[in-house]
Length: 254
Image (tube, rainbow, N blue to C red; front, side, top):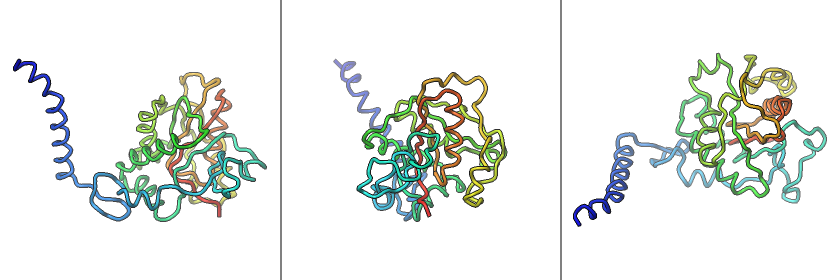
């Protein structure tokens, strides 16, 4: 009888130990909201998430640019006039203040706790998006060796890793490689961005065939879309049947 009682209590003791460890971590390593500074258990507090990262406008299912409510589910004029190489884009929010601070803090401030938080927002958005077909494999937008050495991490991979785990999708972290160290797209004029990334990416040697597969490309922010368009072109040339972008923020058209 004593042995049976002990075994029955083990799950309760394990749960208690995990709760105690979580409480100790919150005490020793307190967290605060990136946007408002309020103490909490996550990188962004629930009120800020609700106010700045929830909802949003109707979007073109191809490029995720805002469209009118009457055009929900329809391609925007730009995608109809010049279809990109990718087939769909899912975005959580617009790249506008104050949500843009989340991207900047992850990318340049090493606030890596934001990556799994963004992944959870993408996971929820993907499951809530009617008609979205989930990819079979995820890959991050690759950084060049120099920029990766300077930053110490690839923010797109930091988001892609927990996103793949929660969605139950295979992750191919080195599927794509950047073979040309391009200038940052953010520092270029709109007319220069397409030529800046042309020929900059390639499929990594030794990767499995993509023929007929649906590939998801993960990034923190989508601006002009030229980088993702070039990556989709490379993936389609390698046999991918469909390419879907999963980005946390989308820069609205000017």
